[in-house]
Image (cartoon, rainbow, N blue to C red):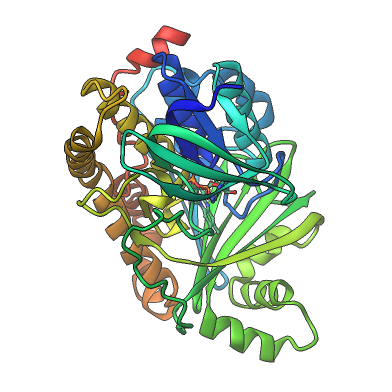
Length: 416
Ligand SMILES: Cc1cc2nc3c(=O)[nH]c(=O)nc-3n(C[C@H](O)[C@H](O)[C@H](O)COP(=O)(O)OP(=O)(O)OC[C@H]3O[C@@H](n4cnc5c(N)ncnc54)[C@H](O)[C@@H]3O)c2cc1C
């Protein structure tokens, strides 16, 4: 087995697998390390904006996702208590991919990882990256096998950190250690997800739910199966557990949502739950990518996380992978030494801010509004009179903004 790599990627979510594929396609020797065994379900609303379909096509899974996904997403609905307003989603200006779709993460992440393997990426799964030592250009990455039985050290010139949001970042051994903030705050957001068969939710519609202390969404994500995912603040979860005693946190949270977003709850009334409730958190939306190079190039949620109310996390994961790969390849970063990596990081961090910072700030604004339905109720009459405002809100948060590097779908055309 090869133990010297041009790049080691931590985490095989959409960001990590996409970056691994793009670099392997350019002839790099890439190791992709994922700590979980696949297929696995994941807390996620599972909606993908149309802007990413050319990217998925370029990554080689365009044809495979169609049969596994729900019908194209053409409508958004805002649900607040018993009130609901519907509006068209904006169409992406692309001759082939005008509408987004929803697909289970157990399918999407597995397809991408398998594609990485097919493109020559060395996949280590279930293995976890535990530590990184050495200078850029000559990293020594310590891996531990999932069952704890084996350890392994890989040499890599460059490290790409795509560890997502739930796990702590892998620290550079001997490097500076920012204290991990583990304080409990009332505003901490916990995330939950369940799947339902036979829900009366229409295909192709994306209801967004507003309720006290949280927000969520539901969608048909393939196989006529509904995905229901939401976030709830810690203080609201505590209150929910008082109101729904003798239940699990997920059951109490679900009871809270059903009580406060009755129009949405009705859509699941006939639904039969498939699989367990998943819970995770707290999530920490915000920008995590510093301008200073800290020894790894961050992508996906590891670089920055938007509040999931806008459903743009998978977009930002895929698009930041494209942006990083384009920056690395454009600047001839193959086997770049420490000094060169610092310069490349500066260019990447600047481009990242341009593409994603606005989406993150806007998502925070929408989230704060959605978590306070008494404020939203004030603008509901205006939304009912002018549903096109909802379409505009969706446009503002980047739903139809072409991803970096693929504005004209040139790369997609190469693989079509
Ligand atoms: C409630 C909710 C609803 C959402 N709805 C949507 C939606 O509808 N649409 C949308 O686009 N986004 C949505 N998102 C956001 C989306 O799920 C994330 O933004 C996306 O998964 C980020 O992808 P990623 O590749 O950065 O990280 P992840 O998908 O989290 O992948 C990271 C991977 O890294 C692995 N890992 C971590 N540490 C290590 C390590 N040390 N060694 C090896 N492996 C490691 C993990 O096991 C994981 O598989 C939602 C999120 C939540 C919480």
